[in-house]
Amino acid sequence: MNDKIKSKNPALIIMSREIKSYFSSPIAYIVTGLFVAACAFLFVNTFFLANRAELRGFFSQLPVLYSFFIPALTMRMFAEEKRSTSLETLLTLPVTVRDIVLGKYLAAFISGAILLVPSLFYALTCAVFGIPDAGPMIGGYLGSLFLTATFCAIGLYASSITKNQIIAFFTGFAICIMLTLFNYLALFMPSFLVRPVTYLSAINHFQSISRGIIDTRDIVYFVSLSALFIVMTVRSVKGGQE
Image (cartoon, rainbow, N blue to C red):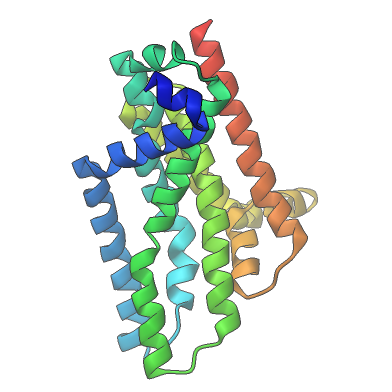
């Protein structure tokens, strides 16, 4: 592995290693299976019961689903390596902490994006049996990728601060669901706090993009939050080695 790291981008080597490791474990198929089942329920509820050929119901609930499934996907990435002390071994190789974090983050993002692939069948079904508005559908998938990027960064940070995967999961879930529900918490806030609290809501920015409206404020929100948690993860891993 030493020679591979020297000859190639270390982050890409780590990304490849993480993806192979994830999909060789049962957790990948359990998480994917449960996610697909939840998405199927939302689609069937809209398509058959509400008799609408669209994915708005699916996308409206996606931030809540991701709050649960993305932390489940990322919980082992640092916690398991800390528990087994393989992180220390990895750090003895010619890689930086930034390379390790970036590689694991890219692996988490790709794995999270793969969760969306089965839902393309629902999009195709809508196109065959109805005339869905392409703008919101494309916007929904674009917003989903931004949401994936942000929640993966949060989940990775949660995994970096503990050796226990369960604690990592619940920490990531708590942060993600809090960001998702900020929109509703604003209803109980004093008027001067409503605007800043609403801005912090991930579901607010996601819904804006999923309507087919590309606003730089929404992009800045997701990119900034992702960058913040990646930086926090780097510092957490460095702090754990001191």
